[in-house]
Image (cartoon, rainbow, N blue to C red):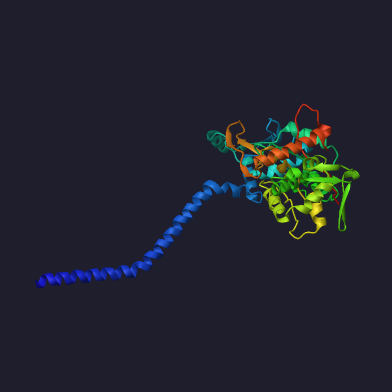
Amino acid sequence: KRLKEEEREQRLREREIARLRRKKNRPLTFVSAFFILIFVSLIGYLVYFDAIKSEDFINSPYNTRQDTFSDRVVRGSIQSSDGEVLAQTNVYEDGTEERTYPFSNIFAHAVGYDTNGKSGLESEANFQLLTSHSFFLEQMKNEFLGKKNQGDTVISSLNADLQTTAYNSLGDRRGAVVVLEPSTGRILAMVSKPDFDPNTIEQDWDALINDDSNSSLFNRALQGQYPPGSTFKILTTLEYIREHPDDYQNFNYTCNGSISKEDVRITCYEGEVHGYENLEQAFVHSCNGAFAQIGMEVNNDSYRKLCESFLFNKDLPIDLPSSQSLFRLSSNASYGEEMMTAIGQGETVVSPFEMALVAATVANGGTMMNPYYIDHIETYDGDIVKQYAPVKYKELMSEEEVDILSGFMKEVVTDGTARKISGEEYTAAGKTGSAEYG
């Protein structure tokens, strides 16, 4: 009996000693688990970074280490979606390389340049152009022989025929042309003038950067900030419809050629008197008086939120350098500010690209697509490396709103301010605009 009691007491003592040891080791166990968790998290992040994020960092236009890739790779070519070469590297017998642009000025801002820094696609696709995915045995052979591998080819979404047509149509005017495919967001053409010849960028560099009168290096399509004029009436109309979903058809205004409120007077284009107009007629004839009246009626905060949903006061979802379009109307703005904003003047400024996105959203049934300008990457001999796909940005309009606005915009062409292009083989919808720009 005594032995059993001693054994029981021994077991109790051993349990107590074990309990005390566990209690003593608990902080050490916690610390060990903490460091193991940190280590596992670090390994996990390194794997994630290497597999997913590393290319984004390497491909940053600010990463000058990319240029060291050119020691091993001949810079790949850039092509249009219809098979035209937009940029290529010529390699001569003595090993020297020359970057050439067969279309000279036509794609100046969209394709960019590769000397004295980089711009356009030359900058944004720099990593892909200096990366070779050719057959690995071919790469090994070239490295063994001390030869460079050929970089991949970037197939852009740009259409050479459309780009050339837009370029020639703009003529000697200062300005920009943007052509988007509404259903996908593909950039089909993007022209800015004045322009430059990327083939002679090195020789012309000092003159280009010191020419303040032309600012030829400036991409007006994406970086310009201009009053939108009457093109902005698309958004003003949409705001009015949203605030009056059941009775917007009852809007009416009698235009006498001008409208005055307090110390502000707004006139219609060339003082034209439109007479009695409903909302559609005011839009089709681009009546400033009617829209100035609308500007004083709509809710400024709601108006601002609508415009911001269309990317005003926000960065555009595109990798190329761009400027924000600005909507500055405050909740306590004056009547004059409200009237000016409603007709696309005042402090409202846009990039041409922004207004192309607005029009494309209407054309795409109210859904804005993320714009993109690279269709796919392929090896120099045509094997697909990466295919880019359309991405939806956001649904911004209802089906009913789209039907109303698209109907108005078609009438602008058939019976309104854009009727000069009516009667053609194609069907068009749009909104004209002219603005004062100091």
